[in-house]
Image 1 (spheres, one colour):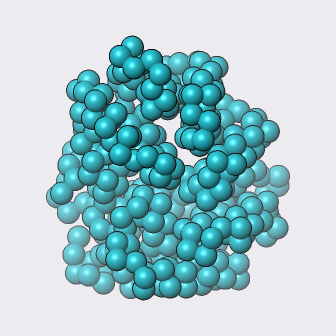
Image 2: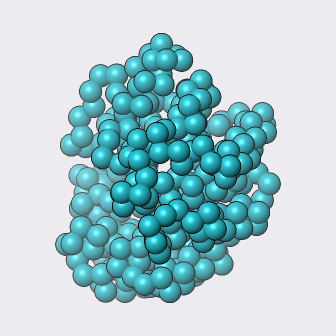
Length: 319
């Protein structure tokens, strides 16, 4: 079983919210990086190869380690031509900038340097998009996203980030049914391959809009009571996404093996809770396993573990 994140004790019976998900090699490499053993991260990224979704996930998780910049710099001293070391340094500097420990300009420069060392890798541009969400303009976010898509059109994390960024555009005091985030999500889902997890992006867009509206006081902070999940649009996107999951699940032996699959099943599970369909939510949670991802859009100012435990108790008799 995956150990809990360092410094975050787990209470008995509570779901774990580890950004590494069930990626055991990533957990081991992250723990080694905490101790200064960057060779484990080197080996992990070499094994990841050009699985760009998994590479992006692994580098962002490793980059969040508070000592990642120092160890990436040591790695670069040993291997100055390592594109993986440059990418880890870029990701680590981005997260330092987000914590106010480094200048955004320094993080931006390191992302561009990493991109020059690995022209085919979308991960440095993903890091730039993460940075631009908090320290950039709309044009900078769009440029970073376009660079990711040019290298990997189906990039999962980048599409989620853009949905979140667009959802935060609020022009008046209501929810616009023609909001640009809905158009973006529908376009991306239509452009994606038939088996792509981006089929769930319209659910993500609907969820991100709820997050923005609830935090602005324009929607009830109780997701079920808000009515946001009872609209015609919500019913349509949920039906399409759940139909995709049922069709995909029939052909998949490892339903939760990939980080993007886990994240999207998590979105579907939360949305099913808000629809008032706990049985379907619990079935999805069962497919994900014990390491459910945190969905901050779902419960503004509330602990999401309460709803997850309630669903498990109701349907599975656990938690």
